[in-house]
Length: 412
Image 1 (cartoon, rainbow, N blue to C red):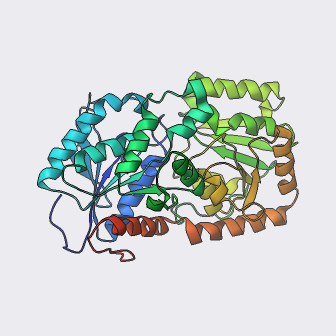
Image 2: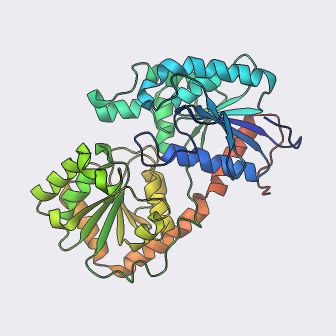
């Protein structure tokens, strides 16, 4: 880390598999990448010096690179310089942590922030001997994943035990929603060291696109967005469509459209659509760029977010930012972000597909209510879920564990 203003905080973020430079849409590239990139950028704008440490997963990557926002990204040599699924990275985390310890021994940060459980393990290994304060954000918990995926969970067997050990040793834990707080307490982690700071959205990028809905002709449009994995509940959206005559369902996610037919989940969804008799009303769009997503969300009458579990769930927040109401399962962070009967409708994960279809029909039949929900959703995002709000909350946590004065609220 280079020299900086004495009042600024030096922040080391450890994000072993989720680089802020990664292109979204891959199996291990998603919300955590966006979170790390946006938080680092907003802290940098406030005068803090931020370095993100991520694993080198390519032989030609530079050792260090600075983003246009001024964030330094360091590619840590740990394991082979090639892509490795995150659930197979644990054997290389000790090497990652030892590298951090050597790096920080001569140039220590003021606070270390681990993102994901293995990052917390590496962050503590690098910080332990130096007495550096570590803040931990899990982004997803092994207990929840195991409960919902069972034998399909590919996490290392030691994941939950390591998550507990990280939680007990770090100075503070940032949970992204109240449901996560309950999970952490059930793991035996002390409530007094847990703070809730949600994920955020850029309300200038994710904003209503004028005319996107009005200029579209044809049937009502339902949209669901996310990685093409079973837990996202795209199959439930398809089955619910059978109870919503004339509406069309767009599914955005996965690889580019030309590669969709090689995707097992895409093939499964197509099969379900034709079995339900709605194959002509379902469109799999493949991956949609973030630049195009606000326009797509703005064109939809409703966004459906029906996962079986969701640690936070950024898609509903992005939809609300675009003034599009949401029908979502009452799980995880969606319990916090969506106000039932005001910004959208929460449905029980145990509701039938027909129940979900009825909720969708009721909203589509009331354009005034849709507009009201959309307006309330946009206001809720501006009040609670901007990256400036997130940076405020994270900075307060840093201040609680570090003696360096806070620059919260100072924008440069």
